[in-house]
Amino acid sequence: MDNLTKEQRRKNMQNIRAKDTGIELKLRKALWHKGYRYRKNDKSLPGKPDIVLTKYKIVIFCDSEFFHGKDWEILKPRIEKGTNSGYWLKKISNNRKRDDEVNKQLLFRGWTVIRFWGKEIQKNLDECIKVVEEAIFDTIIGEDINEDIE
Image (cartoon, rainbow, N blue to C red; front, side, top):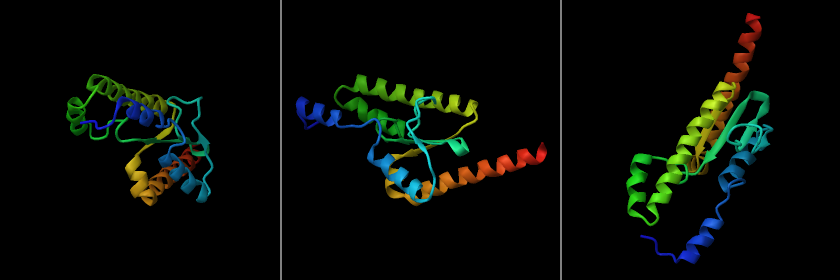
């Protein structure tokens, strides 16, 4: 049950950022420290990815668990019991569908798509960096193979 007044809830919701969130900043700082250069929120790509490693054609999304429906089958019944459940069910469901569509569009264009949950970044930043570095390595190896074939 929601213990906040409508005004308190409204103020909380207004403070939720769409870009430059804490999880994005943490991951970007770590990537920068490792020497990887990137673009932020590239509007020319579907979904305006949070981080774009153009050199390697890799996009990274930093998704919050709630708004992107992590463990949806567990989260959905909890939302159904809460206030304004119709709105939240529709919003999160649409976010999940949009995420899938964005992934398909980017993959079709030849991009590697990486999605991290916020808690993954907060608790396992080193593992997230390893995932990115493995994707970079795979991209470099793929380019080398293609050059050998030509």
